[in-house]
Image (cartoon, rainbow, N blue to C red; front, side):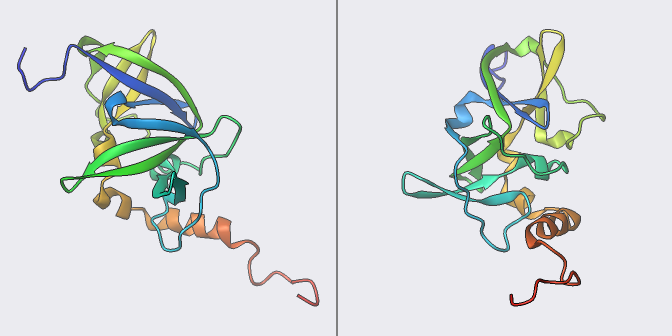
Length: 181
């Protein structure tokens, strides 16, 4: 085995977004926290839902559902934020990733990881490191550094930004407003 290749076994944290199971290398995960107040910040990319206060540090939180072109994550009792460390432009940054639910930590042998498909996944395959074989199903192993890179975060599709703004804006201006407001 070449020294540049992955170790024989790698551990991954698995989590769900819109009923699809994803995984990221456990070494990228710093902690998992319960979903709490996320403060919205104006003019952020559509997939950045805001920031949280993590022990005095400001941490941006990404909603990967929006990044993948899906509806925004619905907050439930199981919703959590996975705190990850990503490398951007040779620097390390801490970001939060919203998840519908965290599933488990798994140990995948290199032989159980297939290359990403040429088509058919809901996300661009360049975000994938591979497809992990888990029993009779696959989970999508994300390249979290690439997915959360500065270029990718700024590359939000305009129509997604418009959808996000429309949801946050409330009633359209043409709707009658109650008198006295």
